[in-house]
Image (cartoon, rainbow, N blue to C red):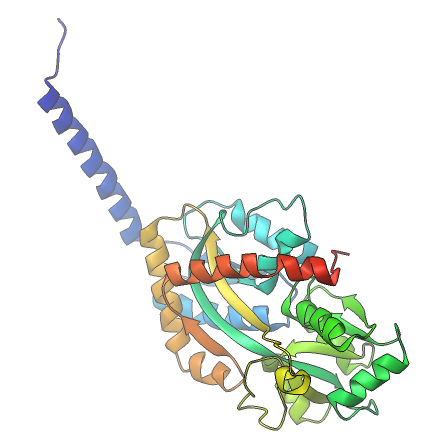
Length: 328
């Protein structure tokens, strides 16, 4: 005997199935998170990405009730850690603290194994930090003008640290080279931390580091700050001029930090993670403490973060081609 369904019956069945799917998704969202979350830091320990990621992760753990485990996966100009996250399950249990290099890698790597926008779901534009042009305080250079004079007198002899190809330190160094018309050599590291160590050791001439990790060394007299890259002077270094003041040209480059998840992560999970990030930013151990070290927190919705990411990905390719920056 063959059973048939009327059109109305079929519609009713579909409605039941749709309700079941929605209920299942809702149940999943309510259960999230039920196990530890991995936060991938795609650079070596010690730099701004690592510092901020660990601070945010600790406070997210408090809000979510599960551990947020920070894991450094350095290499290939952040691409190793980034590819790992892009290819992870879209369930919210693997996220990444991305930075400027995330938006510029596509200009260097023709066969990038992921799309910096399409393969990710933005969680939050966490913060940005102005860069500061540092030199070792033992050098007989007291100002930006003296640095440029020294570079012009010794073409190809002075160098600058690069935390990662295409990162803020690299873009700033390349922009300095173009605007000042000087011949300086990039020295690439696996993260800002190792570059800063070499600057302190006198092994490189200069480094555009984030204020957060340089400030204590500037205050102790080990480093000399010549300029900051933000549109206005930093309240932490009020006597240090901006690059725009010194050059009369636009020099707006900051180190930015954004948390991302794999594309396809459920919207309910994204909302939960965004709320935890927002709570972390407002926590005194993060907001007040790191603001005092130069971090400018942003926060906001996942949609705002996605818009910013798209703008950054589109911003740099032309400059990178003009500057001749290449992946080493």
